[in-house]
Image 1 (cartoon, rainbow, N blue to C red):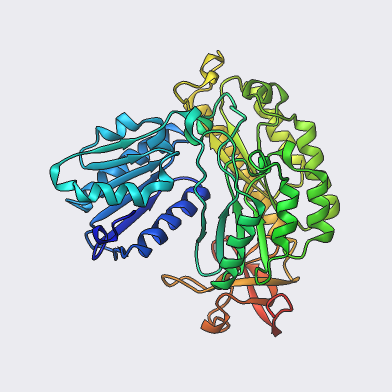
Image 2: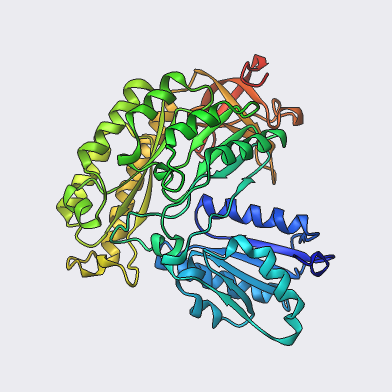
Length: 454
């Protein structure tokens, strides 16, 4: 039994590093603590509780986590500081050595955050500390999360963990093996999001195409079930491995789906088959290219984002050129470029060929320029077209904005922006780029609300 009196009158501050899944989980933590009577601290206010959800995908991420912990301890003197997430799981002793950290929860324990926090708050004055981190093989729990990223978009966690163990990656050690809840439970969470006013849901996880390992269900069956949730106008899939992106799913999104958008995010990591082999990826460049081609054949206007890593061990100049050439010729829309980071304990450290930091930066720059060219060309091809945009209220002086079905960012001119359009799907005509080329300026059509909104 949780003693809710330990939370009464307390405030909390939240800080998240890393992926959308982390942000989704942090939002769920905030909601659960809110239900216990904990108020989110305002900007500049000292909080009684500080929760930091960490990332460990690169060495830079680890350093940012340490810096954030130190900073938040200083900003909230005397607060009960909780650190969870991947960095906490992988380097709990290092986190414990940071002065001011009160509690560390690993991946198997964070779903009991409220329980552990209630117990520890009662004995905080006794000066005790609390570290609870299970070994990777013992990470079995699934912490549900369907949280609001903003007033229009929710993030639904459909899967956690990974069984792939790529040579460069520590995520399976931090998150555990692949696991998932039932389709029925996820549909119920989506229905609740719709009841709360959500219009769009993004499916998140570590390797969501692997959905079904726990329950014997299939990802395509989850997609079909969610498609029937009344009130949710749009679904987006955060990321799908090429070998798990089935032709059946592509066909369904293209021709049969009511609400799944023509928007895909597909990790490539490398366009060199030799590097893919060294990484122990589960596909080759030909399979990746076939998936991109299939999507574009059925959905010519689809937005396709791609993850690509540069400078990993074994990536010779010739291998990098294979990656650049493949991405240049494929009709992808945007590249998310990551320089390779050495991770202790990974088998990639056994690969002898090492790329210098300077060369990693150069290769990153080459692919980022290619990405900008492709994204601008994709946007420019839609200038003058009509589109449907889910609008979001302007914040901090920014223009009212939103995204089309195929993920083109749109801004409304000030004369068109109205509060009643927030969280509404409207018809617009797409114009030219905005001042910093990050969005297209759009004008409202005469018939503003679309059939999708009604």
